[in-house]
Length: 78
Image (cartoon, rainbow, N blue to C red; front, top):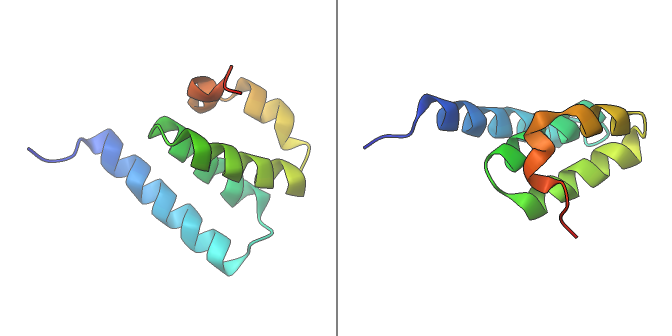
């Protein structure tokens, strides 16, 4: 049984955002959306680390993070 299309899409997103971060580690957009993809994949610790970096680089992303449904699995974690 193969991976679902959604899983493949998440994997591709993580790979693309990781490449962007390698090219420009100061790109908050790449950190933010890699965090969202990791949260959607269930990688809470990695997602929180990426989100923290995105917010460090661009605090204005906090409002978007509050509304982004991909971060729902992270809400309420200590």
